[in-house]
Length: 113
Length: 115
Image 1 (cartoon, each protein chain N blue to C red):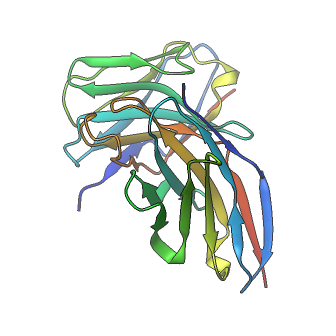
Image 2 (image 1 turned 30 degrees about the vertical axis):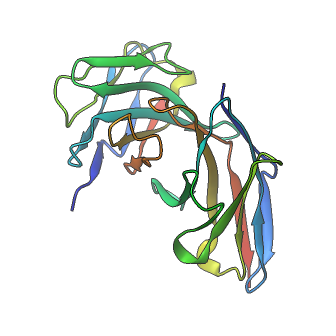
């Protein structure tokens, strides 16, 4: 069975400082992993995805994530936070082809000036 | 541009009423999903469909039903609305199930309040 755990429910950073949002996963298969972002009163938007190619995945808006199989982790990072990055972030796992996505409970990112 | 549209954006209904939330996508995707989002729970899968006439139960399907009569639409029906079904509902679609890496495209959500 697949599952995903986001280790922090809330992360606060200052503008211009690095962002780290942590995610651990469990999967019986070689997983596909995603990060989605949700801004207030909006639907979810794909930030990036891992599909067993390069372990370091680059996404939109300067975000990237590294797949570490030995640690079963897929942490999201950004070198320098911007005020517009304040949002809810979801780590998502899919196992075998044809199975639905499993969402983590989300991490709220706050960015202060 | 292709999109996925949910209606209504906001709905207030009374306990016991039947409610239908609409979802329409122009991506021509075979896969469609309904999720509910609640504080502290993230998104939980209600029902999903891999094509016309195909429907499947998700993690929290009790009290909900869906039907898939064409590719574009997957309406979600609450048979007898309960206060526990107050939530934000998201519809999503993706490409064929053979592509495990295909991402979801989301609508903007329907905020449902059951009084």
